[in-house]
Image (cartoon, rainbow, N blue to C red; front, side, top):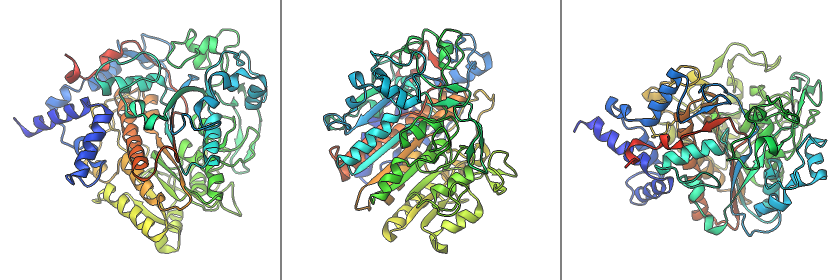
Length: 584
């Protein structure tokens, strides 16, 4: 049998395994010293050559390619029109799944039930008013079971106050219940469920010694349509143009329900009480890190533009180490919301300065202390000008100026051991070496990677674990060189490096990990990329769980797995996503 066909057989067998089985296999190889780290098995299989015959049997890739060509698909569609596969490419106001670990039975404020069911803020007029500054139409719900995204912040703070030492916030950007269902169906090789928590992915199956819980949350923002002045860091029209809220009669009581008014979820309903804003990533992430409802496109300011502290700021003041990891650029909305402050999410270079403890437009005199670990994308994204970054924009890399990179480098008197994508250098090895150096020297860690040609995110791992994305909404498919795969670490390897650098802190640490490419895939209406991105994030969660089991326990650790918002993927025949090799 030709070598590439053997590789294809191995790849299909690997992708057919559940996430739990993959994890056990990786750990077995690691324990037997056949691979240098537990994450290496994923990379080893994912980077095997991918032949034409194998590609022809890549079911999800074929489905996605055909859907783009024919503009429709039997398995589902994005938007409100079943006959148009690409009808909608933005976010929605869907309820979002929340998975917690280290919470059940852990006391008031830490147990997830403190915020859902009878304790849902949406059952209380006072609580709803505190969230939105008013009572939005049809939002008060005496039967609500869902929590609010601000409760994610409340849960983290309560956990720290209760004595937890390690807090992990894992955000799958853009992953609603339907996106999770698609990935779990592929991973399990069958349609295992049609409602509830589900099974098939590691974070669905993992029990965390009986401490895991599941719920749903509302992500609607304070408002949409706020205008700002980036140079003055001011808000021009507090309150914006459309206020947030959630009407369960139109959106559904649970995230798996098919909304009786799909246009409502994208702010286009013609029904009474059918106009509520849906969130963007920055507003939603700020709600989870800073505990307030705010306007779309801001980072950690209130609806009037006043800066607020995040959970990372507060824990850092207590002596904790804090870090953020992302598969997309370092100062995109979600990683930026871990720590930075700005009236607009697109002021990338200034957001990066906040993250790295440098003077910025929002902190011109006294900079923030900076994160202890920052690892993400953005490498190679060169732009000559920017209309959204204000007068202090520096032509060059869209996210990080050369001067700022030099200023933070420990070799030049800065605080960070830096690992930047380099031609011919193994990204995984270089990043882990930098992490070990940072740990040994007591320095901070900064990693900067990505594929500049495609906006600076890491290469997409598609559903079957390869790196050959099909075309999406843009009608174009990303193509990666051998260098793109070799010179970039995976999200799992970034997470391992972050854990290595943070674990030496005597007072505990807080870590955000973002699988940001889920959102990019869903914006592109690309089911193959979307499933792969979820599975990539799932591997990172497995790495965190392994760290907790080795270095800590679920009495002193907390992990929250959720998303900042949903899209509008409607799955009508999820069974079509089952890999061909898994079908009887």
